[in-house]
Image 1: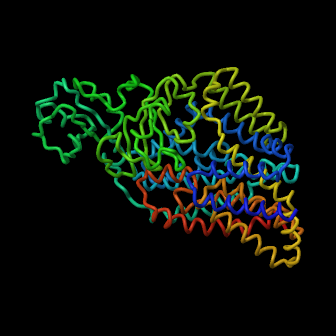
Image 2: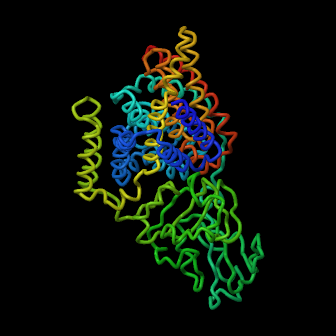
Image 3: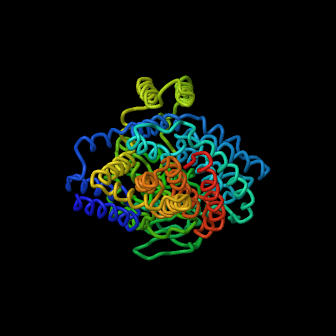
Length: 575
């Protein structure tokens, strides 16, 4: 028994170390944890099966799948078009209210992705004055309900496994509402610290497009000026790559040579202008889909593309797509597109093939922002069914008329039957990473119990049963979870810290809910790091922010957020 305890603690410690060292690969770390627990015989077969089929985890998966249909409707796009007005303060309040509300019932990544483009291209205000508040509002909105964020649902799935009962739909609402109010006030007064970054054509529309001059092109032998390459609408010839040599800036009198690579910068929607030039082949032209099916994505932090070039990764074979253009943090990406080293947060425009939708690795490497194929849009009665069915399911679950898990199963069946969703879409967007992380974390909790670690910690903590020790432990659980969130992402922090918080509460012999809520809220409180939460990474690039911008605005919000949680969680959930 003692040996099992040491092995379990060793696996737990190595999991934390792995998450810190391999921040971009939390799925691999938790996968290794799962294999180690099974290999060391620290869990039973029944515990393995129940962790995989945990009701809370299944609810989370179903909710994410049903949300895919809503992303295909015009609901959020119509709302986005009504958000931005001439007055900055009016726009700010509309944006904050709409984002927090929809983030409380929808996937907040989808909410941010929908609002990202209208904000970035709005003619009235600096996008950098709105994009960071957009991300923060989506995080705060997620704290309002059980389904507002995957973090809450992960905590609920582990709570079900540990206690046999579920948190209610509105368990988070009281504290979440205070967080929205208090942090919203701080955000409003911190607006002056947001940078005013001019979204000029080199940044907001700064996609870099690589086009190759064929040997028999009619451009060969004539200058840039004569060929009309300086008179394109919203596209600018910024450099020429010739035999490994970079020519920049490009003179109007520069003569075009065979096999030159012409690097344009500008508005990706004007891409098809290049088709008017004979013998000018865009990097992705060979896919045959350059005239349609353009999709804008952002590179995930854990993507296998990070640190590699498009040429060395075999991009086309991996995703059945080709990169048409790239943009990075407002930086100038130089050289041939195939030789650019990819970074996390890079924006890519892809020309996708027919097999793209069925690839299971898309969601693991990209966050899709826009450009879904026209045939996948949902209009008419199907859109009404998607929106009405989703809202009806959520409302009935919230008032206790229908179990959320059962309601989502019925809704998903209806979406498939009406072809609002297809099996290919479900397979491609299925959140295998979240399933593996949560299942492994639940199994690790079981191992801690089986090996006697939980009992040992409980007995040790039981020696310190004074009220001052309880609240101190409560604060420490919150702070450790918050630090892990900023370093290893919210879902991993929640999954890993839940068993610690739960065990600490048992050791003190108090109600576990205050500690459970401390972990849940701390895991959602990522405001300082652009990499702690997906929406932060999305706006980090779109707004051309620096890390210092997140620290200046996020630090005071994090302090207020922590104070609200530490003060009001014990009020609504007494020890």
